[in-house]
Length: 151
DNA sequence: GCCAACGTTGGC
DNA sequence: GCCAACGTTGGC
Image (cartoon, rainbow, N blue to C red; front, side, top):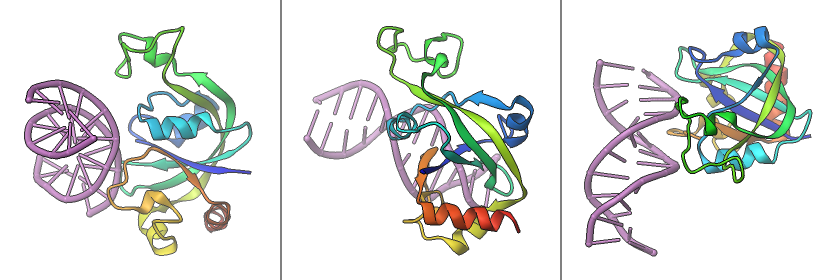
């Protein structure tokens, strides 16, 4: 089982939005490294939902991969911020997954706490200046986070 | 709101 | 292929 972490700004789309919607297509990722991780995801893998650009930043809950290898529909949408004129239906550039809500953690696991617990090699999100929005989480690290989430 | 860090673009 | 300029991310 692989584990992942994905970022979103809660003002745009947060864990409470996912709880309401139950599932969502994780669109708008326009970074090749992140896209390659999205392409490699398989059904049922668990994904930590990280709230960025908020106070405090941190892991807010858990979701799981519900559909894999979807073409990101926003790449074809000229009205979208994520429109990519170089992408066509015949040769799309951006793939993603659909995710399903699993749980909201009782308390957010703040970036500060994550920094106290993990090195930047183990958990990339704690690395200063890290802008990658989709990243793998080693299993041992994921287990610790899940324990921490219980309080 | 500021600004450091970063990824991408484009001139050469 | 290099790298300066630029736009964006995201912590603070």
